[in-house]
Length: 232
Figure (cartoon, rainbow, N blue to C red):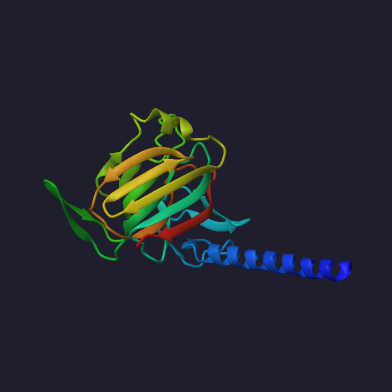
């Protein structure tokens, strides 16, 4: 009799554990996060701008500089509007990089009217908000730069905690939130930039390899754990 109750109890425990595991898996699948990289290849991405090389290595997206080319961008084929984006990155101390958000690129030149002036964005020019990756002594990583348009929107001159949060020669973590005109960034959990700007409400995500002039030695930046959650 005891053996019978023991077996019945064990069966109930196994059943409960299985149900809990299934529920947890369902929650994870339905929590709204999507992976931007499949860890195998660059399906879902397209390169724009310069001729830096991009590849997938051990699940990471790796961008490597080449000489005599302009800024290069590996861009999602999809556009996103309101979202939370999280990712890890590690950059060569000699290379500048960044993450484009709500960015655009057109096959034809585009006239843009800004306060007090008009500018022309050339055909094929990636432009839009960039969350900076800056391993230089300036340390403006997670500041917001307007690539191809207005330049710096939020630097980190007066945010010493964020400047000190960057880890040289190591993995760093970005959290980026776009909600309507609000764009906020965190670097390794430290609040960095807080911008209100409504110029571009939606666009693609892009991974930059900055131009390096005539330098022939490839400099690399690595990205991993790229995930995005769209906000309604």
